[in-house]
Image (cartoon, rainbow over all chains, first blue to last red):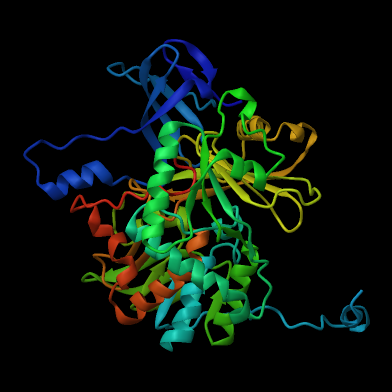
Length: 92
Length: 413
C-alpha cells in the first residue's frame, strides 16, 4: 500500500488522503474574462515535480506536498505557512 | 483443423503478408503528420486517404501500433449519452462500427450484447430516466427498466447487492456492444497503409516548429519532417505535445486501471455498469471477465498498476456476483486518461494554424474511434471543423460554454 506523510499525523496509508490539485496563484479580480478562464480551467498537464494540496481526511488537515507526477514519489510534505523541509527523496 | 493452416507448417517463409508495411525511413515532407498510431490516429489516416484523397500522410508513434489506450480500454461501444451533442456524435459512431468489419475484411468480434447501467438510488433512477428520454428524443434505443428486467437478463446477479445497495432500476441500451480493440487499430492501420499512408512506429516526436502561428514541421527521433498539418491524437501524452506548440489546455492526466479474470464458460451476456459500485464488466469472446472501475484519484503520468485497485474492484464485483469469490484475476493494467473539466472531448482546430487536436477522450474514447476518424479527417482536409464536433472546440472554455457530458464512463451523478 502506498504511504504518505501527513505533517501532523505522520506516515499514513494513501487511502486516508484526498488530492487537492496543484497549487496555483489566483489572478487579481481585475483580470480579464480570458485570464480568469485560463485560471479556472487550464492546467499545467505536463509531467514533472509539482507542489500540490493534499488533505488528511481523518484529521481534517490540509497540507502541501511536493510530488513527482511521473514516478509518484512524494519528495516532502509540510503545513501551509511553514517552510518546506529539506527533501529526503524517500518515498513517504 | 482448417487445411489452410497447413501452409504455415510447410512454408519456409511466413505465408501471410504483414498487416502493414514498415517503411525504413521518413520522407522529408508530408501533406499531414498524425501523431499517435492508436485507433483515433489510424482512423483519421484511413478516412483522410479513403474519403479525402490525402495519401501523403505519416502516422508516427513513439511506441507500437495500438499500444496506448486503444489496447488498454474495456472495449465497450454505446451511444446512450446525456447531452444532445454527445448523443448525436456517439450514435454516428455506433452506426459506423456496425459496417466496419465489412469495410476492413477483418473480424472485429463486434458483438451486440445489450448494456445495463444499474441504478442503486432514487437519484440515479431519476438520472437514468432523464438519459432515456434524451436518447429516445434522438431516436436511440434506450429505456428505463425495473430490477426484474435486470434479473431476467442476468439471473446470476444478487439484485440486493449484499443488502446495502439494492438495484432499483437500470438504463437499458440494446445496441450496447463490445469489439476486439486491437483488431480495430490493425484494420484501420492496414486500410490506411494500402492506400499509401506510412506508419512509423518507434518514432518519437521531439518538437513541433511553429512560425508566425503556422505549423512548419515536426522534429522526430528519426529526423525532420516538414509539414503544414499536424494532428495530435495521443491521449495521455496530449499535454506534452501541446506544450511543444505553446498551447495550454484544461487536460489533466489520471490513470485508469482495468483487469481480467481467467477465462470462464460463457455466462454473462449483457454489459453491466454501476456508477455507485464503480464497476463496468463484460465477458469477452475468450471468456475472460473484463472489468474496470473509476479513475485513480490523483494526477499521474504512468501506467503502473496497484493492488488497492484489484481489492476495491473485487469487493464490488462480489457485491453483484458473490459466486465469483473463487475466480482468479489473470492480469491488470492501466492507461493514462486525458480528462477534461466537462467530461467532453477537445477536438478540432486550435489557435495554432495547422495544429489539430483529437484529445480529452479520457475514459470514453474507444467507442468514438470511427466517428473521430471521420470528423477529424474532414477537419484536416478542409481546415474547417466538422459540424458534429463544433460543440467540442478548445475555445469553449474561454467562453465558459462547457458541454457537460456526464454520461461518460465511470462518472457518477
